[in-house]
Figure 1 (cartoon, rainbow, N blue to C red):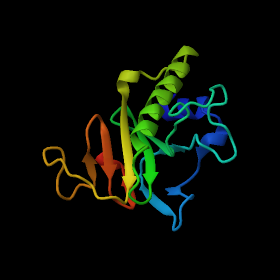
Figure 2: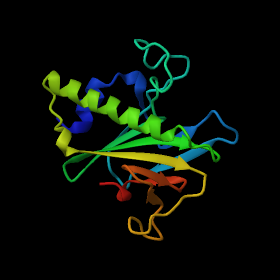
Figure 3: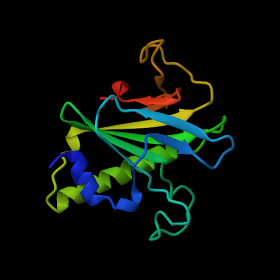
Figure 4: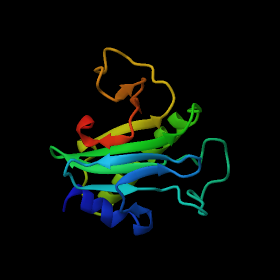
Length: 172
């Protein structure tokens, strides 16, 4: 069974989306990132659903109930690519890093749970990409990126992505 099919088996269908874009709907005008899959099969999940408590087993504590907007999964060269995505309209990016890091830990838990029930995904074969889609100015780290590349590192495994289109070629 492919890694994507394992995830489709483990993650409840209410959190799986059949979509060709990521969208921030809580702002006006809306922020939309089109997915250019380049013919690669993928899965999009949104764990923060409207009118639901994402983590009902936790008390409210600052930073405890954080989750990203979307996760895009796809396979490339035998490795599972996880694009942990936070869409930030405007210049306020203050919570993005917390949401992205918390989501990475949550995704590791999902993978470990799949392994526990005999559906094997080797965590060493996973690339976690923590990406903030932002309209804010991006500080370029010249040694990490090319001038035409919309993906820019800002340290500790976090990236800014300045584009209206998510292209899989920049990941994995």
